[in-house]
Length: 457
Image (cartoon, rainbow, N blue to C red):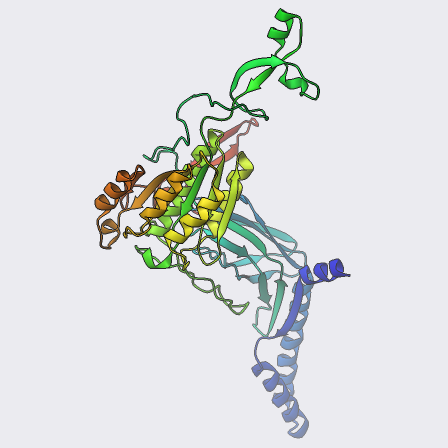
């Protein structure tokens, strides 16, 4: 029953109504005048106006049955600076043309307004694309939406509503050329650990005799053939430990231009409410961009990466490897907001309970105080190396000395790197000027890539 109700709610809803009461009032006045004041003029007006009213109603009824619409998202995975593109299709299967069709969209993606007016002849189909640069990371929706049309006289209006909506998550961008090195964990380089691993790793130090229940894929066949007995590879623990990325999302320490706002629910037939967007000039967006880029680089090197960000809704992703882990981290970074009340000292205490000995912690913060530095020393005693990325407060319009904070961190054996405003990232407008790569099929069937501008086609 629940499935049937869901399908029912997803079905288009058709409404036919008079555009205003004035035509009905005039028709009633003419009818009364023709009855109580018999005259050829009143009868002629009543017949003419009544015929126009009937023709308008018939026209609207046919459009209500024959108009259909569809929309399709071309690329479901997008990041800030990418192009969000949808393909819209309108079809008119009625015997009369639709002189005007208005697309009403209630999506809340910042900067994306696919509201257009179109016209279609009878038994025809129209297709076009709407596109916009993704300006703000976060979770948004495409839809609900509707199409609206009517008769040429403007007496009746037909609205076909599509109540279903599609969730879309705009991820933070990933840059591969950040001038920030990755920490190595307990050891650096291709160093063999002193302990042996009970699981397969990328490091195979030596071989040992085959034991029952050893997987067949562990067998080292050259050694087995040379010694005439089965030998398996002996794996080392990874020399480079896990990486934990900690984002300081305390509201009080954030700086820069832009404030994040939630989209307001608007009336369906009005345009979506205006959404605020965060510029790359804010410390929040710098922190998210750096975290996404470093996580992607570490995962590409087969490192285990975890994420901890303490906004009002904490985003914690346990350490893991692989492409799936990258999607989890990017989703968490897309949803995190710098609206938390927990300070960096509390966040470091929580990180100390999650990170294992030999791991490395990348702390990204715009906090200019030094009261949380003792917590770095505590992490060091627990065997967790600390690498702090300091977002330079003066460059973001704040006060404080990043150099003094960096010196204090180095004195306790930690590592610190200062990032100033504008050193990382590329604004979406730059990507818009450069254009986008698209796939085109030539006349011979060959697929080629071409760079195209943003403009919708």
